[in-house]
Length: 126
Length: 125
Image 1 (cartoon, rainbow over the protein chains, first blue to last red):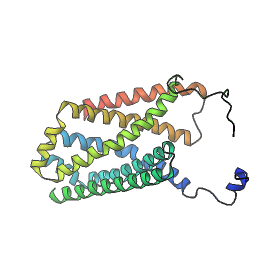
Image 2: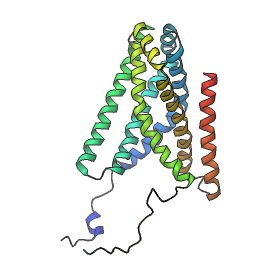
Image 3: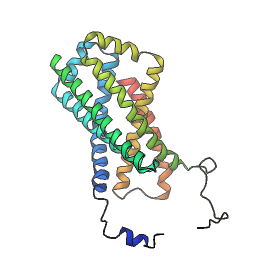
Image 4: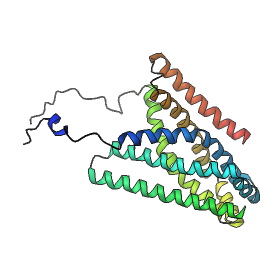
């Protein structure tokens, strides 16, 4: 039996520390994604319907390269932050929760790297 | 510790009718998760572009399948909906827009804006 009050257990443990920056970066990446998403849609449409040379040439234009790379960094980061919150909200067991957040972060880090390297390969062609 | 069976229970999700703002809220989360999964599609597309003309043509053929096309346009609509409601979250974070009478009106505006943006994308881009 634990006779300590909830307050006594919480006192001295400090804040959640990294919680504020997680929340803040979710907003910062969201704000970045608002204009970048419109550039992404132009790129996606070109990929789906445009001829190969035109797509490669479009991405090789420095402004477009920067926009798409910035979108990749912001989007995969934003997705990992968001999925972390979803896991933390719905998974009660600590072990599964921690491993789940790890898995999400590693998976999205890996996917972002794959996408970035693909972009670098494309601009070398273009 | 003895439990009292007569305690009031919270409304069960299958019985409780969510208000429009509640539906929008959970849709924001669901579109967020689905868009995250959809990022796999982006990795596939951009990898195909980097793979040369043949890989590019194969990717375009896959993206022309009607089921994939449906998924793609679902992704675009989810993106716009998530973006529109995200803007509202940013407004809320600034401490604005909590007036009760604006809640449903803004929710409908978000839905209309995301539909209009999706249709505009279909036409223009």
